[in-house]
Image (spheres, helix red, strand yellow):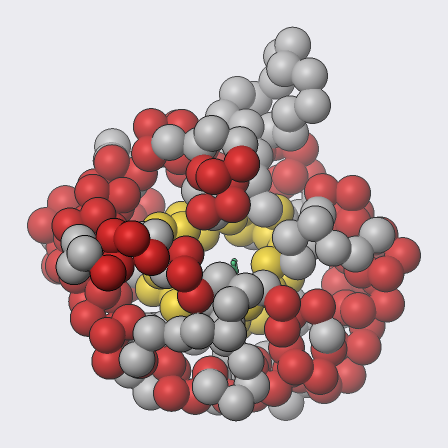
Length: 257
Ligand code: 13P
C-alpha cells in the first residue's frame, strides 16, 4: 500500500443475507472496527434488498462505513423489468457500485462493453464504480493474464475524464482464486496491479494512475490479508466469503491499518 492512498476494504456479500441478517451483521461489525475506520475506508455491498436496512443502521448509528451495491443498470429509468438504476442506489446513500464482477460476466452475460456503460452511468449518478477484472485458470496457466486484464481495463474503463479516472476503484480478482482458498503469490498479484495502474496511466495520465485504488480479491482471509496489503500497488481488498462474518471481516480491516 502506498501512504498517499487511503486503503479500502470492501465486503461483497453476493447473494447472502436478508435485510434483517444484514442489519445484524453491520452492527456486529461496527463494534469491531471503530479503531480502524479513521485509517481504513470500510465498505459493505449487500444485496439490493438489504441496502435500505444497512443504510439506515449506518445513518442512525453514525458509522463511518460506506455502502455499495453489487450491480446496476445504465439507464436512469424506464421499462426495464427487474433492473435497478444508479439514481435508485444513490438515494439509498450508496457511494460505490461493483461493476463487472466475474460472476456477473459468467452468469449474466456481462461484457466489457456493458461494463463500460455501467461504469459511466455510476459516475454520472454521483457514485464510484468498483470495476472488477481478472483472468480464468486457463488464461492464467497459458501465461495470458496481463494481456487479458489490460484489455478488460482498456475497454471497461474507456471514455472517462481524468478526474473520474482518479476516483476509480479497480478490483483484480483472478477467477481461479475466488472462493477456492487458492491465491496468487502476493508479488504476482502486485505485478498485475502495477500493469493495471500503468494502463490507467496510459489512458488518463500519471495523476489518475497514482490516485486510483487497486484492490486484490479472491480468498482473502485475516491470515493472508497483510501479505497483499504489504504490496506497493495493492490498496486494499474486495472480500467475498470472509465478509459474511463480522470477526473475519474485521480481521481483514484491521490488517489494513
Ligand atoms: P472470496 O473472498 O469468497 O474468494 O470472493 C472474492 C470475491 O469474489 C469478491 O468479490
